[in-house]
Length: 137
Image 1 (tube, rainbow, N blue to C red):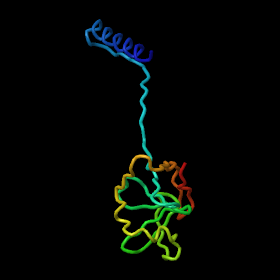
Image 2: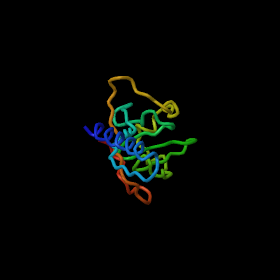
Image 3: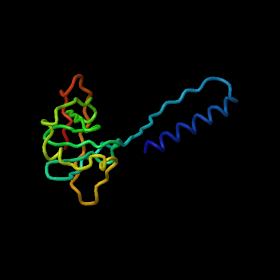
Image 4: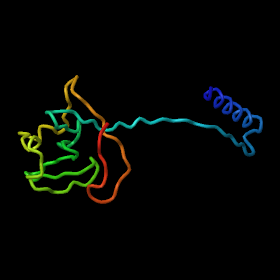
């Protein structure tokens, strides 16, 4: 219905331009509706109590309310996926996350069909470390 209205307005505009010999000012109004699909990363289960961010450029795990990252043997955690990770002692890392043999194997990891999946909720940016809620649905 809106498409027909917009086409009618455009036709009227061209007719007005033709009748005026392309001289003068013509105004046109209309409404254009667009939609954008934004996909949020998914968490997929890799072992009981441990999820990994699917198709992500670095291995990020979710367990016990935190996102966990390991770089060169050093562990980091954050409340939200987009929060700045904070370095933590290995003693804070859940044992089932520490026992992941090769975290690098989960770079751009894509789980097989039928694997449990949860989408990460989008949230407003929150200042400071660890004050957000990067939970998932």
